[in-house]
Length: 393
Image (cartoon, rainbow, N blue to C red):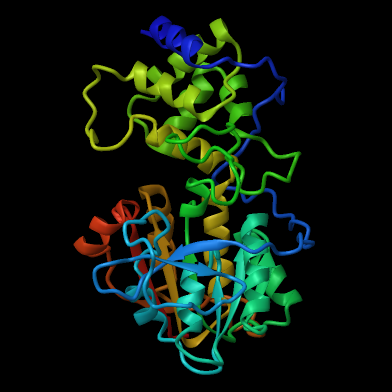
């Protein structure tokens, strides 16, 4: 089977001989790493057109130019376009309940879908737009200009929240609400922000870094081409919950030994798909490489540690009566979110009476999932889950 996969790869693509980092980075889910903030400098904004929610009752998209900020029409020119959709917009707005003069933090700005909906609720609402992706940060800069300063771009990771907000003059316990939409965004999957190999459905480099400008960070290619079978199997099992992790790891190592290092997403996706042919898979509706790509992306971007740090940091900035909205897309994220939910339900013992915001307390609603209509319009929303809480202390 592995020889078949290797022969098929040799026929469809040429694998260049390139050099990668010699060692696999040693990471731990229990330790938050790489907290350094990325450079704040951004390239001059360029005029771009994006796709957003359509006002028509039977359509979810429309065309929009960020430099105009407001739409020329309430309806789109292409109602069949369904690849850049905001997830659970109505539920997010219901939980945040934006009002005039309130300030919100969007921890995953992306193309600004949720942020824009918040801004539309009032002419005086403001949004702090955080994203670790330089391309998304540039979009936030465009929003800042187009909205007349109602959007303040912040460039960094979840673990940088406290430092960035402090630098922006935001005091703990002062925000009306926070939304944290975990995981990868549709623009990244669709390569709308530049090809980086997040999707197995498109040809691209095996990069998967949300900030590819960081030359010192490890890439997916580094992992796939340097890790041994045991390391790969452990990574796929721990970060992707892949039940066939050992089989995939064996196929990857056998293929690269015969034909050299992997360089593109299609090479890896084809290898995984071929090695799982004939295997009884529980989730037959998803691509065989889905969990493999998830595992590599989560590891490369340290997503679990970042999520854990971001939840605790952002919660401190929600004011009493303010809302905290968390959207997760797979079980690893959901476990961290629910663990945070349980820990924030009861008031902890505070050793420092001078820091009453150190352990915020929330009352949480029941977990919500997308409606059938939304899932039918946007298949990527099918695994989404939303937790919404109100700070009470």
